[in-house]
Length: 153
Image (cartoon, rainbow, N blue to C red):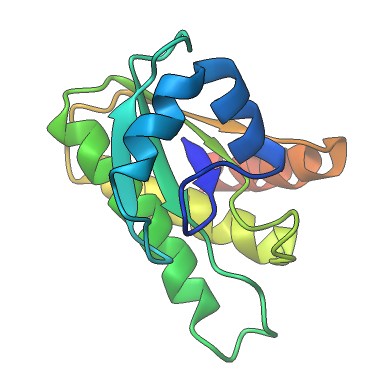
């Protein structure tokens, strides 16, 4: 999963790292997609990555929560899982969407991510495993604590 910007043409953080590792072919394919609105997702080939596909989604910028940011973040996860299922993918890895440069509060973002993924997987899907990749360590702690609480429910 790529936490992309709306142009899909690479950037910083996860987006830049994915583009660098995948090679110039990813940029070429992304340039043909004409961007991606916040909350939606697009799928491309993985090229030089060990992953066959990359699903790109654009998370919301945090504006205090009054502009539908939570709903848009939920849509990022739902709309990313749909092409995963449509391409019969078994494993999906998500970064902590919108919590870096977009300043979404980590506690709320993790709650939305975990809840949305659990609901989606509960409907029955080809996706068998979802990994939350967290950086920095503080994000890992939040997700770990919440996943522990979720498992206990």
